[in-house]
Image 1 (cartoon, rainbow, N blue to C red):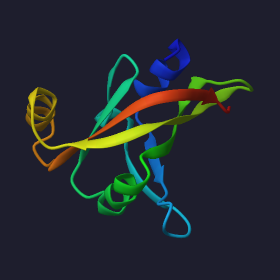
Image 2 (cartoon, one colour):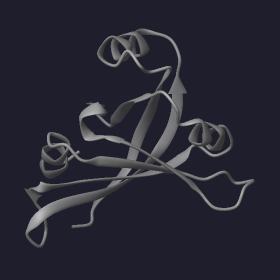
Image 3 (tube, rainbow, N blue to C red):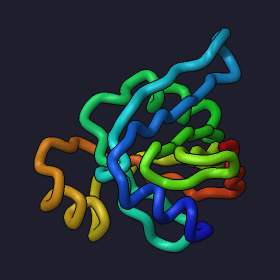
Image 4 (tube, rainbow, N blue to C red):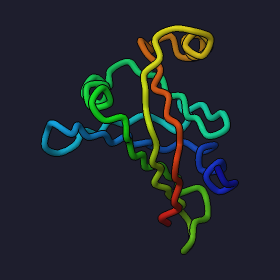
Length: 123
């Protein structure tokens, strides 16, 4: 995770999580907020209350793509920086990380854990 990405995540903006099932046409996309994403090394932890279509996809194909951005951070061509992230995903329903996230975000029913394998600044 580079400094520009971490700076983007310190500002509010939308995060889009995109998944696809190998057995279904198309893809699914859900959104959350930058401020909900907890970062630890190459892992992202995201509170999940819905995300049922993404969970169904991940059970068949755990590869996901995320887009994040903020107009408050200088990007490659001026104001606004955005990234595409690729990684593997799983849902956590118990354990220390789940408990820690549940304290911060009481509305969650699961935690989406993403292990980032690639990060690419787009703007």
